[in-house]
Amino acid sequence: MTVTTCKTAVKGKALATVPSLHARYHELLEGRDTSSAAWLNEQLAHARRLPDDLPADPAQLQAWSAQHAAQVAEAYAAYLQQRRQGAPRRYFANRAQALWFLQQVAPTKAVDGAWLHSTLRHWGDPRFHGLIRTYLEELGSGDPRCNHVLIYQRLMSRIGCPGQAELEDERYLQGAIQLALGQHGDAFLAEMIGYNLGYEQPPLHLLITTYELAELGIDGQYFQLHVTIDNAASGHAHLSTQAVRQLCPAHDQHAFYERVRLGYRLNDLGVDTPSLISRFDLEAELLRALEHKRNFGQFMHSDHCRLQQRTVNQWLAEPGAMPAFLQALQAQGWIRRGEQPAQSRWWALIEGPSAPMYGVFDAYEKQLWHDWIASGWQTRVRRVMPGSWDVPVQPEDAPLGRSQDENIDALIEKMAGNRHAAPEGLIATRAYLRATGLIQEQPC
Ligand SMILES: [Fe+2]
Ligand SMILES: [Fe+2]
Picture 1 (cartoon, rainbow, N blue to C red):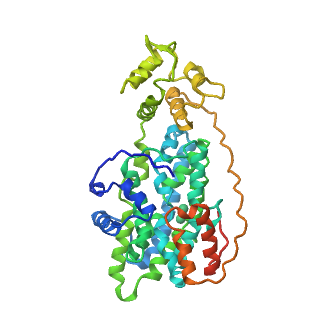
Picture 2: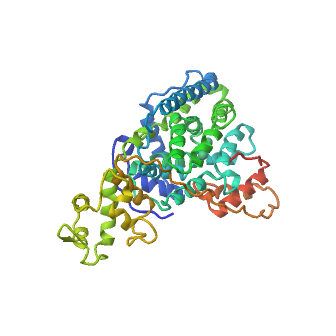
Picture 3: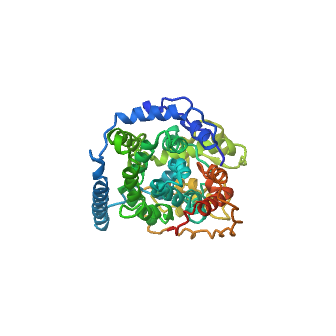
């Protein structure tokens, strides 16, 4: 994965840490991080100050989870009712906002399930089997069609955002927590179980996101599959409450559960999903994209290209001139805001294979232009996204000789972070399933 620089946005105590979250995230991914245990303790200290909604008695967790699911279902039914009565989308005002959101959460989605990595070593202990099953399902049991990280990567490729966007440092917080828990899951067993408990309860925003992405013609397989696979009756949410019960030591129940609580609250560090989505500013995003592109385009235009008495090259040469450039495009009549984008001369310059500026703007940037130009103009035309890529199933791997522990340890190593999504990691996952005898039919 290509790494680009990031803006360092130090906001709040959870972020006032060196190295940056972005750097820590990548060090953890590459297995080079040496201070994440201490860092995890710092995050837990922040979590200590947060409230939570867990029951006082862990024996109530199953009922709590069922109640949570019922509340979410009720709130979702109310949302659907509002939509039927003509309410607008709650999260995504336009398609650009949805694409922006998908990029913002990509660092977290790229390590989906990582907090459970250490459980793989406990394959001989049945108390861990629920957590191991959860992890293996995140990995699609080594089937690239079902591996959650790959499903998300394919989604990003399809929407034209295959690389890593430039993101605020805070976007790496949850991913870094997940990777650190995955690395130190034995020392932070209770906290890891608590984090899993929080992460695996399907939230209302997951249902709404799934619904609105489909409405915008964006393939929501990644989100849809979490609605089903994380269900509270038998899915990951159910397994997460079972894990607390099974792994809580009888002699130390209270202290263990207190640590579970702290781990649970780690989910609440950083910004919550609805607030994140509401931070989207269409014009600011368009300007940011233009400012970034400006450097590449400033010598590319002929001096015949003039806009309001200035050549396009002159417009592009000046830092910070993009707001005036947008104004000039409108004043010149090249952009007619509030109308169907096809009515704007500018749109014809950038969209379509025979457009003079074909390929200058990627799919996300074109969506920003489209939605900024349309601004209020309601399109009923849904973009039809191509269907899922056909990913060939890997040929059956050569069977392992014997399920020796050292072999299994080597396999486990290849299943960490997001390594499991690489071809070698997928093979290792399938070999792990065979070697440990934990093979199971996979939903996907
Ligand atoms: Fe997942
Ligand atoms: Fe899950």
